Length: 118
Image 1: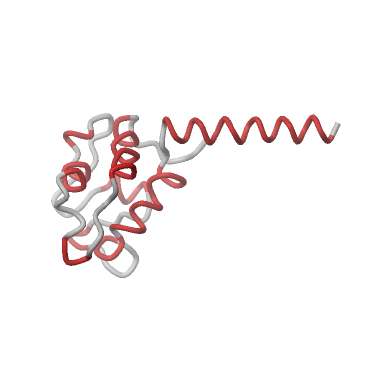
Image 2 (image 1 turned 120 degrees about the vertical axis):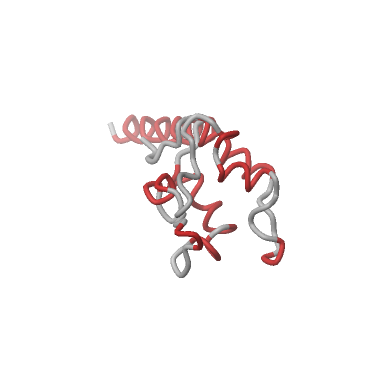
């Protein structure tokens, strides 16, 4: 009985991992990218232009200048425009967001910017 439960749990975990790759979610997929590349200016100690990228809700709220995400449309989303054009993060902070991570952000926005894993 325990073996059946363990197998079912492993199958479920594998399905969630696969779904996450194809349909990124904020907390497990996008947040680690934003933490690494964006929090210097838009994180806990700073929220330049009022843009706080620490939660899905605050990211979707946007900045003092308005929304940075247009659900379902990366091309219309300021966050995607800035990251994909390499305008953000600024060169003074060194690293740019790698292509694979940019693709996660793009897929997340394209899929409607979902917040939770399940």
